[in-house]
Image 1 (cartoon, rainbow, N blue to C red):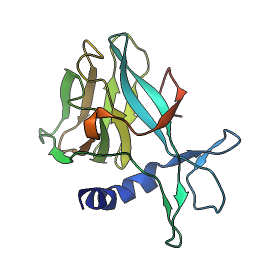
Image 2: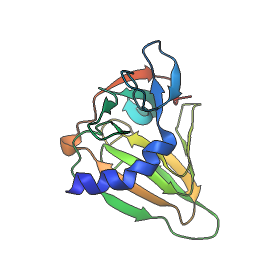
Image 3: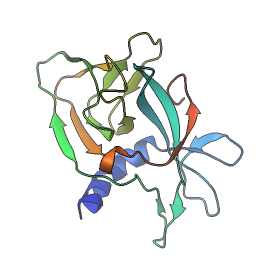
Image 4: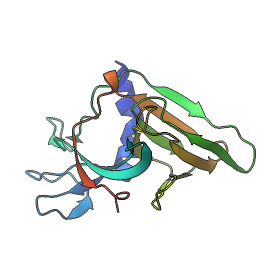
Length: 179
């Protein structure tokens, strides 16, 4: 029941941000094409060698054609919970400072936008309404974490993975976000 409700909330976000990697390694919009192999490319904030950075992941096994006409379905992994966060509405940007992800989780920017930066790394990640990413730089993987500066009044959906085990994926880019 929880997963069904979460997927209902996520459908517009997935439609807005779903990009695919086809068999020829060409990045395309995720589309409902029979017999095509497409997947969601997602930015992942990771902690490696005690430093946070952003990578691009291709979710596996990719979209599966549903028995329902017109639907491609992509499993987001086993989720343990979901929370809806409302950032304070101060009228200006809100700086959440450097922090580690509280859990290995999907994050969906429902409204507003944010810029995420990393110490000792030149790449940054900018997310807008309807975009989702994975935050996996939990304590023990990164000393400082990442810094988030976003629009005040933004709303964010956070969905931790069950037992901290991420969705199956292949790393497409280890040195920056998905393009």
